[in-house]
Length: 412
Image (cartoon, rainbow, N blue to C red; front, top):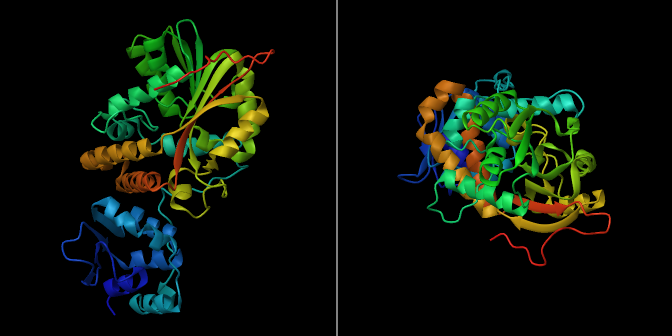
């Protein structure tokens, strides 16, 4: 049996893509929208010794497998790969192909794979997790994200919007929900490259503080603030949310940072943010959630946990709302932006593929492959409802129970 035929047997004889193997065999439909190419026996070693998603991911990141053509067509195989079982037949065929059981050995994972050390969600380990993902290259992120340098879900008024316009739409939506205005003080937790604090200062006249754990983000965000002439109104800090002690603030935004907090730290997270808000102050928490109450932690052997978001945790939004209210916040508004993230991620993937050679020159082929695969897979997950993205707006009520909200407050 050829290798391509074996893959067809394992993944199904109705493959939506083409397969080409190093033994010269091929499978799949004629003129496929995409092709999976196996370049060496190491691809088989990785798949057999780490069955499922992780083995395929290691082979792709290492360059033993190439995904050519429409990445979304290839991702139609995701469920088959995740549920792949390595039975005796596959092991026997691998042993034959690799000329003996001694050659079916576990290879070292690509250096881009990470397993963090230390106590989960300690300040030190959280810094390591953030650095792994964000301290890649500011230039690389600009290639992917575009001039706005905004690494969170945009808000699309129309699919014809530019990515930059859609990101500005998002910042304006957050600003209106927080009721920002001249003289108010804003804290942006997980500020990235400064997009939210700059928008709030320029468009709404606030004084803003942005904090991040990424040194590269902090350095570039500070430069962007200076270049925009906003240094008198915007401060960027390399700081953990647990280290902020200069409240009160009128409003707090947390956009695309919540996934790093961890369920065990939710009480501390919301308590600290509440303590930094004045009475009547508003919190906007924007984060990825799960549609069910399944386990929050990303599976230990998943591609995302090993290569993209180590220690990342995704909760069902009802649990988020409950914890916020248990902490003393009053939740006033919840909005899902699920379809918007699918559109956003597809724009990022298109940017990366358009600048592929530049991206590889900047961060290496392996890391560029990681980002292409994770962003495309995430787009599919949002499209199919396996992931969600929610904005939860809450207020720290006054001693008399007031909220400061209008009788009917809308954000359309």
